[in-house]
Image (cartoon, rainbow, N blue to C red; front, side):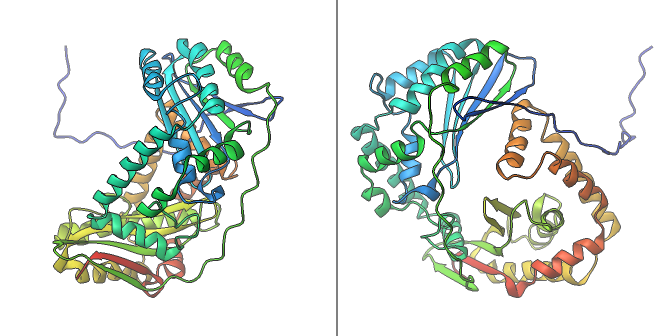
Length: 427
């Protein structure tokens, strides 16, 4: 007899009491490259990442790292850009080229059976890219058109201005592409960056998915034997000055304003990071957060508002972002500061704290359900030198944190007087 399910009765809630990040296997090749292996999953699908310890921090001209990375698949001595795309397509492969401040990431997704042709192909891109002038001109035009469109968006203007306010456009974490910097780039800039920072340089390789020992041997053959140079030392970060209180970017005719509100903070390695991250979740990190309940649900000023802690290799920052009707701009900033002051003055209730803990623990475990997401967690701890127990400690801290702990970090870091904000649009 089939038992009927009574849908009026909520299912039991099972507490999440432990966390486990699968161990990585690491192989150091004779030439200095390192292979990190996660043999996970039953499907013969793999992701390989070649990660170079360089990026915009190492460039002399703004945009060089970005365009060099994006143009790695735009032409080699033997293949044109269309031929490269056709080659990838015939094997059902997907290639991502991701430039960053500190690292450049070349990522290949494919079926394992195609690795014998695709791995040598990637090696060819990383050694034989030619950065054709015609393709560079085309890509520069595309980027300029994108910027011209973005300059009409208050969210873009606010984001750029906020990072410049915290850092400045000469700091690696504050600089951004604009039309003038793009126009000033030449093919020789890309070739120079490629030769100095990528060509025959050591990298970390991360292999994830369902793969065999033959695939490991193939990667070692192609990327583990040839003589390489160590990555160049990165230049020291310039000193920072204290950010101003506000920047207002008037945009005539705009019916909305974009607000970016926050301050300089710190990254994963700071002793207060865990507690501050949990506070951020309470304030504006999920749909049931205080900012969402107040500014979206109660006041109706916005469709959404979110708070984040952005972590960087050296430092980090806290930012609240939202778009509101222009006439609600001042009210929104006032409500944000009221919520910060409440966190400082009043302990979080037991019910709210337990709700956030349950949400965070569930999200935490939900974030490691695929081989690729597990590898992404590993990258965070490896490239930031956090130790393999980092997520165990984070998980335990979510479980043990108290309302008093939350209030302590609120008083230390979230005083409204210490915050800066940008408004793009107007009041």
